[in-house]
Amino acid sequence: MHIRETREPDAGLVARLKAGDPDAYREAVRRYTPGMLAVARYYTDHSSAEDIVQDCWAKVVTAIQGFEGRSGLSTWLHRIVANRAKNTLRHRQRELTTDFSEALDPDLASRFKPNGRWAVPPRMTTSESAEALLENGALSDCLDKHLSRLPEAQRSALMLYEAHQRHSDEVCNILDVSASNLRVLLHRARQKIFLMVEHFQESGEC
Amino acid sequence: MLMCRDLATIASDYLDGELGATDRLSVKVHLMMCRNCRSFIGNLRNSAALIRAHSSQTPDPDYLRRLDENIAKALAGKDRDDPGE
Ligand SMILES: [Zn+2]
Image 1 (cartoon, rainbow over the protein chains, first blue to last red):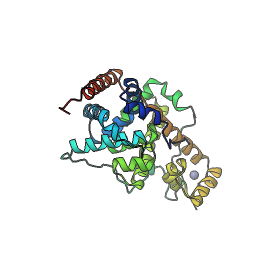
Image 2: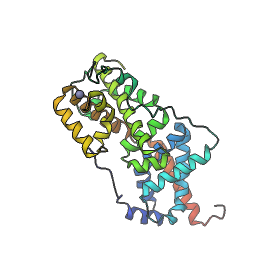
Image 3: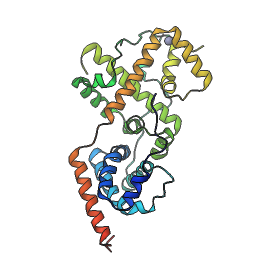
Image 4: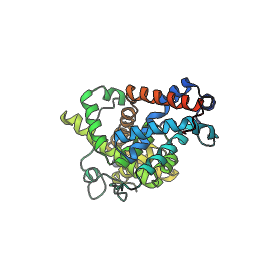
């Protein structure tokens, strides 16, 4: 279990941003850009996401004066990116390809007997740390491939929740997903990665 | 009674502390008795950690530098009180 940030220690940073301190911007860019890109990626492809985030940073230079600290700085930045992305892509229809009625991945669901017990139990026995596993370049590439194949909604929610440690309610808010759909989305993605790692460990292939 | 399939269905909620007390207890009791589900939940926790470690890569340094330059320009423009803004 990991601790999610509740309050960001960024009051000092905000003051320096408002004062137009270039070092503060360098620091903020490095701290918040990954999360902002994750938000933009929910709406669009990688290169448009980079453009959107770049535009947003240029806007922040003046908009920061209106930041009152009622939300955290990252929440505020994420909201700017989400609004901008939505406006730019208003006419583009996004389809949600996740079937939210099923929390179990079909490939995993088929591994249970009718009585609800495992028919094909998990075959992994290793409990190496994630970092140790990722040192295997082939597995890391395979993970890349699988994550990039996820529907964008899944991938983006995943990145915000897992990598950038956002609260579920914030992810729901920014991405317009319901809390229960977010739960399904996270669970489905983890199962996909579980199945991928299991297959990889057994066969050495992606 | 909670079956393995049920446990697999709510495993992420368990890992993220999103279950109510009763369900949480059922999962714990089941895990004490079931080796397969212990293995599943351990591996699912690992999958979450793997996603976490993998997705927190830093963006391309060239891109970050472009952002810095762009911000520097915007800051300079603001100082001049650019009426074009
Ligand atoms: Zn079981």
